[in-house]
Amino acid sequence: MLFKKIRGLFSNDLSIDLGTANTLIYVKGQGIVLDEPSVVAIRQDRMGALKSIAAVGKEAKQMLGRTPKSIVAIRPMKDGVIADFL
Image 1 (cartoon, rainbow, N blue to C red):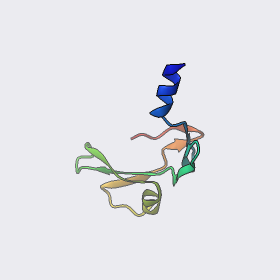
Image 2 (cartoon, rainbow, N blue to C red):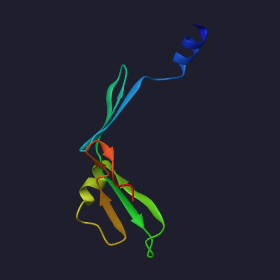
Image 3 (cartoon, rainbow, N blue to C red):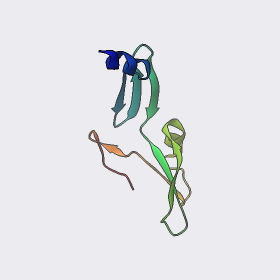
């Protein structure tokens, strides 16, 4: 019982919905704290090997179909699962 009380002081109840279109994060007592498109823009080096995240969410969605060759914007979720993780 004491452990549950102590643990409650240091944790939040939250839910994460990794949707095909949007990703939502809900925090108990606060409601939805994040609602962003499920889009990631990935930057590759010239050889196509090194990868880093260039943008996520709304910023990455704006890049869909408009990126230079060194950046690819993807929707990694397909039918409820992570299908494209380069």
